[in-house]
Image (tube, rainbow, N blue to C red):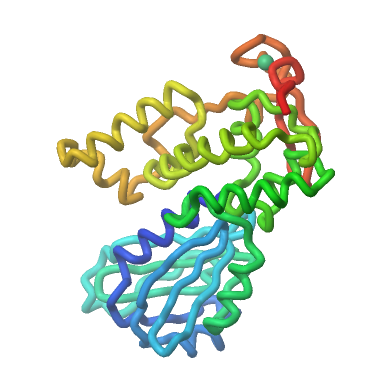
Length: 296
Ligand SMILES: [Zn+2]
């Protein structure tokens, strides 16, 4: 289930593969044939993400808006056969295909795939809360989310999933970040202390880029420390081996998949030993520790 880190990694990968080149756009499945025809042959200018929304700018001020939803996947892979072979085999229900000489991008199962105007892009973005992964996502942005939280009587666990409050956080980051700060997930927004919120925001600003870089959500302290170390080495230029990981070429298999709480119902809390509990909140299973999470 893609969260904001997936969309941001996808935007980077689309830029590596397609930015600046004329792109063949088609809809092998047929459902997006009309939209594809509007984009076919245009240059891809730049892809960017805001929360779980992907925006791809093409020449002629045309934009592609994609939301992967719960099951959507957008694979961007180097073409294996030589570019002289004009067709690339289609596997499954491909709603949208992007193709240039070296790369093929196949989108399957999105909830949104539409050609939109620049005005529509602005409208969509205006409805979204701040995104901890956006470069402009600091300071004022954190306060903007806080204003929305502190006006609401809904539980903080529900507010974190509301894309109009905060964009990009999904179920895994929600559960894990509340646990990391020992926050009671059922506290209404009105009772959340500003210092608590700022600590959560600052944590997401650190955690989510690691999710982008490594293609998986990392929240446990030891894994976060290892990932930050690896990132620092890359920044030094001393660890070329990490480059593939950082560019998202081999995502998802760098770290053992483990969390404090996520999908650990009934198992002992890793901190206090109490059983991890679960309940539907905002349509998804919230996992929490009733003993550790008392703060507001
Ligand atoms: Zn606990």
